[in-house]
Length: 63
Length: 514
Image (cartoon, rainbow over all chains, first blue to last red; front, top):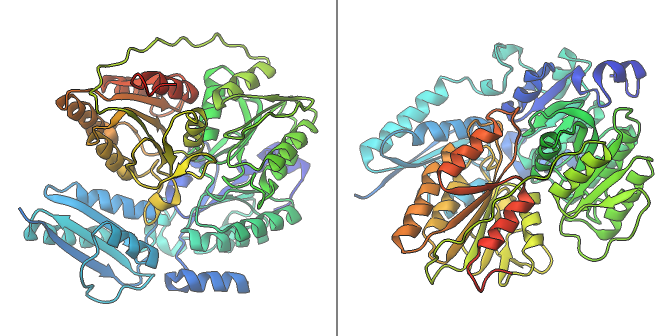
């Protein structure tokens, strides 16, 4: 995952998006890049802290 | 016939909003089911259920935030019991979190974290994050720490979290688009709700969603092309965020050889931050077209910067700067229908905040004027109905809690259209249509729009309906097909959104028009 690498820029574009995208959340967001030939990995995400939003925010602050 | 309601709790079962929407539709497709809701049992969602009068007087067990709730309201007891059985069977046939797994991948193989995803695909540069708001900042931060730029589709991220994320991104030379960034086109790849447009030399930095979609689609339809379109986030040009996302995007575009012209499109702007962004754009040495929706007052002359008067005007000027000239679009003058004496007001029902803000900025002279968007000089009212001219952004957080964005889930807008159909004071209905990821955008609105026409005719008047349709002929569905479906329903469709607002204003009854 080198950044600002000229070779990467030529092959994968200025933003490197053609190299691949990770989708976290709605799986539908994998469709458009995939249809454009971009490799996509979808994370089977589940909420941390048993879905407790308040606790999750506290954990984030501690990160 | 009295209705029957049942609720079900599935403990510790997470499903994403797309799966919950699919389940809701599955349940509501059965005859006799009046309403179905599937949502995670967060405190906010429980509040939404109470407001919808769909919270049972007593739950079988007290729901926890990680539990899944299914509630159905049906004509009678057997139907509602059948709905619960259908929900159970539908969910059981889909392994937990399986809907999030890459197609064809066995669940055991699916990455559960960003780090696992990167181990599988190490060359990745971008994470698209759309998990529920309260968890979104945490995941975005993880992505940045792993060296990824982030497209943050989620809303519900605080200003403090946004500043922290964008500061971290700056420190690592990465980009955070969002929060609430619904669309972007990077390296020609459509992301979020975006659809592909012709590639070219116009680089765009826009707030987030429908403004970017309208602008890029218009550039395409005028014969121009887009190198990249970055969504900086709705609040990026506020004083609190200081344009961090916009400036980072401009720096990136400055180093991009394929970008010859820049377009800056913002809303909710601080004047100082907006001007700083325009100056930074001009410093790239490229011609700049800028439009900040709703930013009042005289704009200073900046060398290399052309101020556009609307999103459509920005598209025309950008194409011109890029050497593309298109003949002006022709519009047909509209005749006012015979309104009933009670019909007076304009009602705007938007899925896009930037378009809603653009409409408000062009309707400032109307009085009384209200909206759920916070816009200077406009009364803030967050209800479907208000006395006076009323323009609503249905993509705003208050309407998307516990559900997906109205571009994916049209049910809130359908309810709002029925509300307008029943309101004898509405003269003109104005809305945006985004052909996008969920197939035909008109079909879900068909019955409600038909009701608008029929009910107003039955009251002895006729509501005028005007729509701005985004998209291009290369999209699916094609824009012309969407336009034809709407026109068949009696809706006037204009070539761009600014023209739609002008048409709506021209159609207001005498005495209410400018």
